[in-house]
Length: 162
Figure 1 (cartoon, one colour):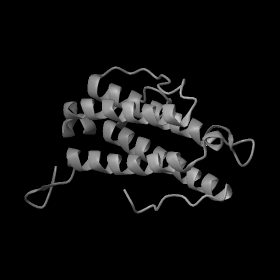
Figure 2 (cartoon, rainbow, N blue to C red):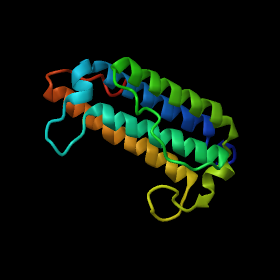
Figure 3 (cartoon, rainbow, N blue to C red):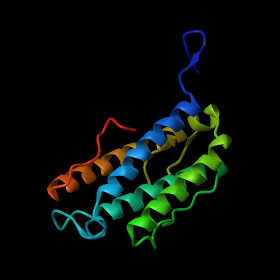
């Protein structure tokens, strides 16, 4: 798929860099939290601590990448045992390293392939839509992390620094 005569509309390396820039920012948000608040603080009872949101981000990334790249669909908890900030950051790095290992298996055709939703019972969607969902989910939860930090009196990282 191209725009004009020579520039691809879907550039796999460009997409990976978007994911990487967003992850670098998410890591800085995690680092800004005091250890206890990362795992305990929630402004109201119906919300989760930011660490729980990060674990969800990692589960979705790990499982989507495994499914898209290898055709193996299973939903797990890759960061379940992360109970310290260091453990959570290490889990973030492990999951992203796995994404980088699997990334060369992706093709534009594979990303445009539409398959049934393997986890949530939603309508069929393309694998690109799955990756965009994972990115939107990370951005959404990172935004919650920004609010939590501000409520704790902590200035969050600059949004534009990726």
